[in-house]
Image 1 (cartoon, rainbow, N blue to C red):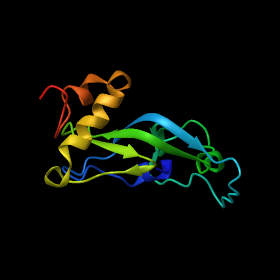
Image 2: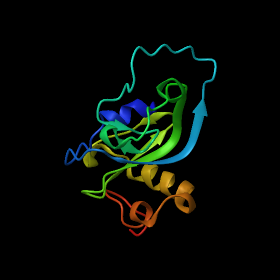
Image 3: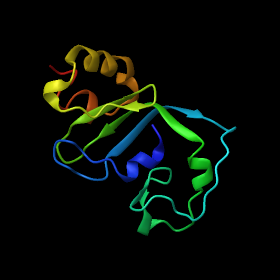
Length: 130
């Protein structure tokens, strides 16, 4: 998942913005040729710095940001407690009724030791406490 997506993604359930990103693995593409006309590229939120644009105390390195992607991770909504997996660089932001419970639980079990309890034990729509 491109970090720039964090600038536009909101929780599909309650529309909360920004979501929290829990990175499990990152892929770097140093060979990417990137031209940036002006920075910052993101309008509201810089995921690389983990801050809203108005909170930045320096100009973000947008060129380097565009050369990296989150391979595996979790997007978490602090408002409703829902979590959404990022698998093979694809964020899966499906509504509860379209999610695959067994796949979600297998994902949580795989990364349980690397994710906070608010996701693994208390997260919605599925958690390891069920």
